[in-house]
Image (tube, rainbow, N blue to C red; front, side):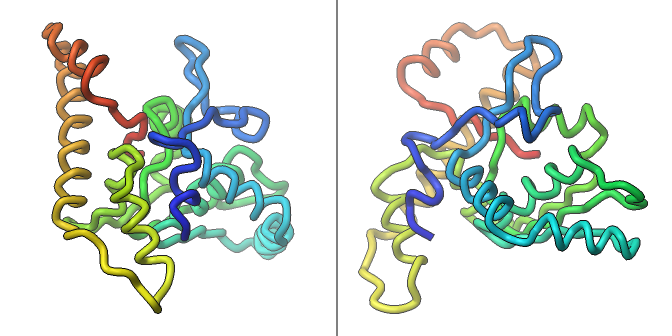
Length: 213
């Protein structure tokens, strides 16, 4: 994976969802559309348009099989989007809905995205496995940086790996940003009325749009 395969446009690489393909990923309150990671969305569209994915899914459903999409690390978002696509477009004579299993997947969508999954009753079809100290599921909570590029370039090849800066600083950066997002959301949930939080957000901290689904 290249850094651009994760962050197409700094700082977070987000883009509006295509509501022609994902009609349900909108907010019913304000009519806003969900935001997702643009790089992963482009990769999903490539798989959808240039592979036999739809054909194979229809073939499995015709045999009354349940379809399970699975992905590890950067393949996790593709599995998530594929599951959503077929939940949005159920096939004739389909008995069981598709399911999704991911392992160490990075985050892909914003609060509208995650809320839409719960509103449509689809959240139970997704199971995400995350290890306690795995940085990849949290990496999208931190803006794109030189450290991101170093880490992703390091893992793209098994050979000729260049020495990188101590990974501890990168880990602390990502975890610090994750903590900021969690604190801000927790305060909003509890309806904290602390004006300094808005000042900090607007002036000093660029918070990630992505949230766990």
